[in-house]
Image (cartoon, rainbow, N blue to C red):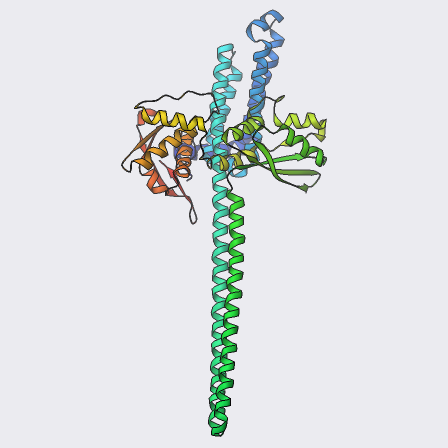
Length: 463
């Protein structure tokens, strides 16, 4: 258990899994496909039939062009997210994700069957956004499982290398010792058989041979040590690439290789504080996959890049801007793999621990006040700021206890994990002093504990 799944009872997860299987056997479609169909049905009813049945004047009063465009944009974002979920087989098989999709499908069908006024459309969009946020967090939690699998494999490789080196060293020492014993026994026999005048010469030869053997032993040990150091260095470099902090991965899929034109367009459209660290491409059938590792200066730059990739409207998105710059149309258009980006984003965001000068000033102000309320726009770093304050409290007072309140369970556990990174202390020392209060709030606070998530080193906070 990673601790980031939505708050859904185990019985409900099991029921959702069985329901998903039954639906697929009867209709031949998964719950993701049913969600897509429900979203298209809602789009047709709200965006098309309302226009057909209402007069032009009534349409402007009840559902103006700006509101229709916003409704269409939100449904487009939902369909992109459903495509990302469908492409992740592990998530589709996750009972908690299936239950979330069941609830989303129910919301879409209810909205499609109702005659929605402006308030009804607003409520429907609010419900859809809530389920989309849960699915985004589920995508991020799935990333943690993949990282844990990679760490387990690396641990196995390290153990195998150490074991093989030890076996070879033991074998070399045994062989050298046997050779030394054999040569010494021969030398003793020769000394006993030769006359006294040859004893000095025999002893000299024995000492020379022993010196050669010792030199060979030292040379072999040095060579084995150098090889082991190189192997450990390579493993450290590999781990560094998997866990590097201030960069994020972008993947683009296209049918026509634009080469340097594509790189130039990407560099131009990246937000301030972001630049291409390295880039490589590979062919997959008729398509080209370009992967760019983008270095970021701070969290504000990372959030700006996230908004261009995931949250912006179609006209202002990074994908559309690059296609416009390259003048691509139809099958030549370049698309961004949003699911892969969100996985990389989740890994990177927890490694930011540096505050800006403004944030440091505000943190000192909050530290002096018994009660503080922090107001800022979305993406301004309120959660990051709160985590730094919590880490400060835990570090300064070993007896301090924390209560973190959030409506979303997955967000609360994400904050707990980020807090461990920010505190740079062991998981146990942090979570033993942290409690969370999540919906339904009447259940009261819950203490955070650590559970093994499978394999060596796989430990995550959960309630």
